[in-house]
Image (cartoon, helix red, strand yellow):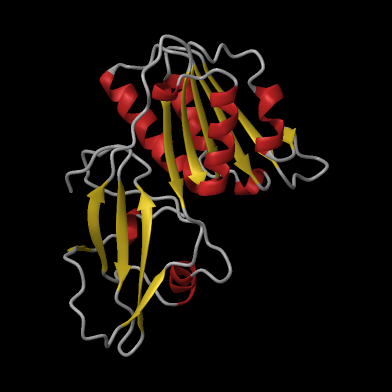
Length: 239
């Protein structure tokens, strides 16, 4: 599949015979790999149609269909450090873009990664970030912010949006770039803060998603579905 880091794809599962079809958009979580395997970060949550399908219906070897890729999200270029700020699985496109930067030798700049998560168990991508940081030639700092951390869990506490002023107090935003990913409300709040603090608007990259239930359509619908590329993706799904 020909795609670029920062792009998204729509995963379709047509459902069992007589059941409902389910579709959901996800960001690629790695840059293209020699093996051609595709990786996504998928949060399983109660009430989500695709989550329910993964938990209850989809099995290894089942066929999923992929529509895409699409999108143009990229890391901004700046003379100063990069702020990479994500909530939950919004980290996926940043992981892919960091992979791409390493492969291209564009890893000499300083990066500050801030990730909002419920607790350490929900901090998806922690191992990947540690691996990226170990290979990054510039400074690569990762700060998770846990909204519901246990008493014995180390790390910053609270809502990342509320903690943001203190977390970036020492960053020279006039020279920085920022890439913000996650639910639309989170992206809007973070963007408003960094712009008000002096970040140039042309150095802000945003990748918001709407945290809504996945699209469900009747498997017996008479309308023609959008063109998709069929492939067996299950071995590459990461969730």
